[in-house]
Length: 199
Image (tube, rainbow, N blue to C red; front, side, top):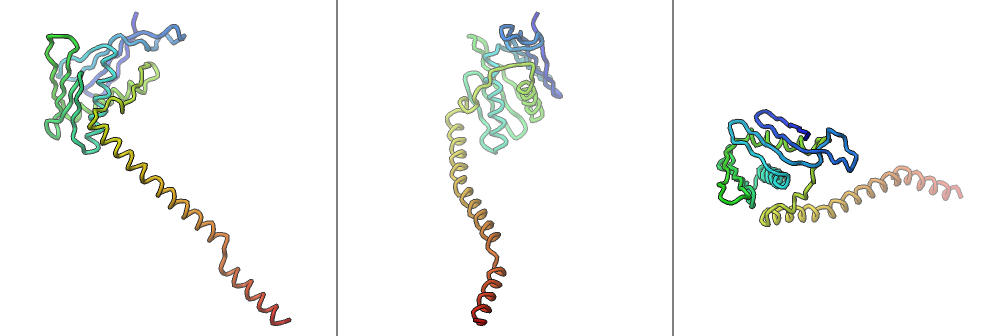
């Protein structure tokens, strides 16, 4: 019998169905071999598929939400899923079937449903009871978006060296001031002058 785990957030629920990997002596309640998943959004058609579809769809939502947060053009396109903003509050999702002669599933969701969906994906990623293959999100970003991301990374790296140099200079100056006392130096000079006069 297969295990079922559900992750809920307000109007969205994600169900994962699968089996533990007994070859690794996993607990009977664990899911490492996912056979099916179902994403239920209130008042929307059921979204379901195989494990090879889950990762790309999750990545699409994560990349799209990151673009929104960074105030960049919110468009994600791939062979499996397209996501773009109709306006500031409505997001247009197109899910494409891998089977021939099946029309794409088109959904329109608001900001709250988008947030709830990503929250369910977060719960899945953080769950100790489900093991899914973590994909490198950068490799799934389209070339235009990847270029923008890499450009920001290079700019950040460009700033690191001057920042470290400034911090080192401040640290060195602080230690020099700590060891060098002007008052103590003046007192030594006065003592030397006194000794010279007495001689």
